[in-house]
Image (cartoon, rainbow, N blue to C red):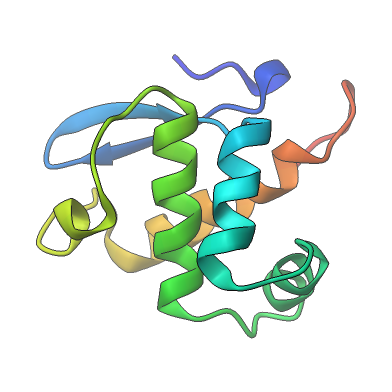
Length: 107
């Protein structure tokens, strides 16, 4: 079960539940992978609904790594996400929101 107080978001990939979390290292990797100077641009794209599939994939990979997963982005190219692309997008947005929330706020 995911713990929102730790910023965790659950995503089921190929029938296996994964707890994703954006640690400081995962956030740094995310910035580097997206070529952003900061995460503000990524946050803005999600808030405005202008994000791309690569943004969703990058967030999911970073979150999975923050949760202890040892895979690579290419491992997810043929994976099945329970709920499809919409569920993946929602999980990515929630993951990003939870990374910057204080206890008591809701995503």
